[in-house]
Image 1 (tube, rainbow, N blue to C red):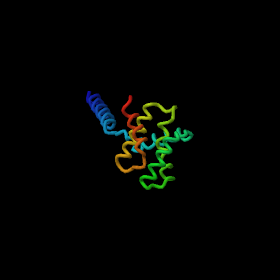
Image 2: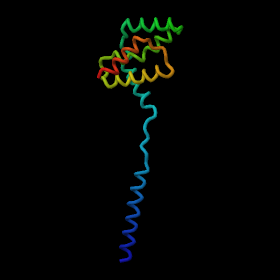
Image 3: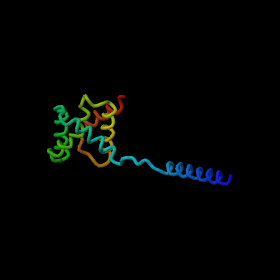
Image 4: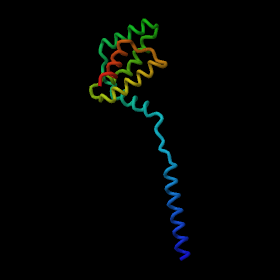
Length: 125
C-alpha cells in the first residue's frame, strides 16, 4: 500500500513538473519579422518598373529638398511592391504601413504624390 502511495506521489510530481515547464516556456517571436517580410516583398518586386510619373516625382522631390537624386531614386525601390500586381492586397497594406511609419519618423525622401498613393492604398479596403 505504501509503495502505491509513493508511486502515485511521484507520478503527480512528474506531471506537475512537466506542466509547469510547458507553461514557463515562451515562444520567442522573430524581432526582425517586419524587416524580413519587407525584404522578401522587395525581392519579389525587383523586376518591376516604376511608372514614369513616380520616378519624376522622386526626381522633383530630390531637387526641392536638396537630396542627391541618385540616393533618392535608390530609395524609391521601397515603393516597388505597391506596383507589383503579383503581390496581395494584404502585403501592399503592410508595405504602406512600413513606409508610413518611416515617413512619420526619420525618412522624408518620399514625394507627396507617392504618399498620397500610400494613403489611398491604406484607406481603400
